[in-house]
Length: 179
Length: 165
Image 1 (cartoon, rainbow over the protein chains, first blue to last red):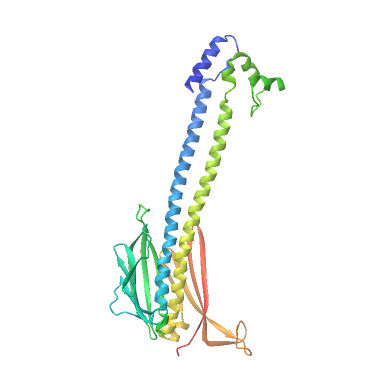
Image 2: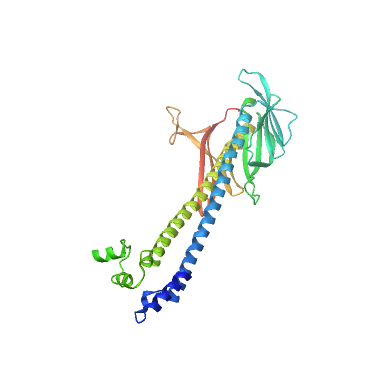
């Protein structure tokens, strides 16, 4: 800008006697600089908002995906016919049947921010993805006059969420196999 | 006009009348063939408005993705409400017929209501007319929450029979 201004001054000098509108006056330049500054502020702000919203959308997508952990646990509880006596509030052992009708134990174990799925004594793997940290899971056994049920409270967070906000999932499932 | 365009070198976005012609006469050719500040100004404004529009889309995407997550949570709460009604039925049919609860779970409000069911006198099918069937109840589970100023309501309805007494 300064260069143009200088240039214009030279032009004006060269063309003495000509009207002043041939170049830019300081006020004009000031206005343009101010205007461009405001525009660039708006643009930078918009960029920051967009980057944040992209991150937020990613986190929300991860959390929605983690709903499948609850879905998997619920389905297994529904199929089971009993709860093993050695179960604890963070370690649920379900007595269930495999495809051939043979009894087996399905276990959901809370270990180091992960929920492990154990099928007939072997560790199948973690139900949560690596970017989801489980902060707590509680299995509460409910005994009714006709059967059993389990209440699940699952608390988790995305490791991309630096503010450390946790989200809760609640579900209660009646063991259909116990009827 | 044709003459002016030829002298300037390219068609300008804004017609400044005689001014470009005058400047063309007095200034160096290098200076006149560049962009004018007004043109840059218009271009910058258009870019800014487009970026602002993109920001609005990004903010809407946050709202939608949050709503999707809350809907997932609400789906489990609905399921839990239905299972709670089954637990009440399993304990005693009397506790199931009197179901009318409302509770607050985080941002969600859940209500579970049992209502009477009528059966057609001739076909014994569930209908709005006919006589009340004491062995069947219509369970309505409702989960509602506030999302960006608007209340979102999800409802789950099912019939429950007295199969144990």
